[in-house]
Image 1 (cartoon, rainbow, N blue to C red):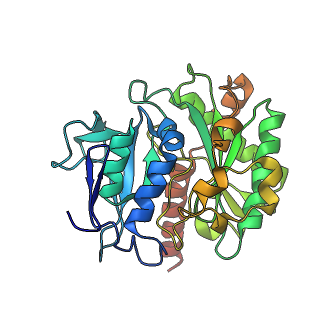
Image 2 (spheres, rainbow, N blue to C red):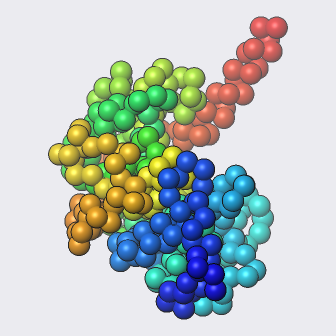
Amino acid sequence: MGAADETRAGVSLTNLDQPLFDGAGATKRDLVDYLDAMADRILPELRDRPLSVLRVRPGQEPFMQKNLPKYTPDWVRRTEVWAEASRRRISYALCDDRRTLLWFANQRAVEYHPTLGRAAQPEHPTHLVLDLDPPEGDSFPAAVRVALLVRQALADAGLAGAVKTSGAKGLHVIVPVDPATTAEEAAAATRALAVRTERLDPAAATTAFIVADRGGRVFVDSTRAYGATVVAAYSPRIRPGAPVSYPVGWTDLESASPADFTVRTVPALLGDRDPWAEALPAPQRLPADLVEQGRTIPVARVQAMHEGKRRAKARREAG
């Protein structure tokens, strides 16, 4: 083994002194050390959930890996999922233990995107996700404003959530739900919460899926439902400085700076704490009126597709 190679938990780790990716300000060793230090906090987010990872190889663009490669060790747990879009069975990893996490780290898997439901019950998501996507520029304060509106919309419905940075420029509000909740109910409730958030301050928040229609407002994305994934709390991101999706208390949100939370800073910031586990409320039953309202709201992506076709037709007819 070279000087930049070692073994942990029976996993051979190689080329540890290579830069992780352009602009990361971190090496592959920093990624391995981070994930190893954070394993007890990240694994509960990943366990029993089909996992997609974003990998980055030297000199290549980052790529999303869902289907496990043929060389995957047989001790990596996996689950077969039928993919309607590609009409094939995909073998997803279940990242349940430190050894599997270290194997992924050695594959230069930087980002960890588990599904909302567990492998055994994919039709029953464990949480709702409201993904807040601010416009370009220094717009994190705008995302914070809208996160607080989401919190208000939740409170008005008798619900509570926890908030984390996306690791990019946005925020994720996560709402744990009762295990009996179906994917259809969760999707409907998410749409209703997005619309209620927009109504609280239409100048700050929008549910417009088409970017040109957002008018510099924060997009409240309600489309994380069914087989969707969301980046796990504490997952690194392939962004300048190697930031991390990091839990922030509601009262600390306005003073938070996402760039402060990176693979190099987070373990020391946390010490022995797990603020995400502390922040998440217990699973909640969705109010019937919220679900019913959501059922009357079109799915944003589908609505945008129809609207895009309508506008294209109007342009053609206008000559």
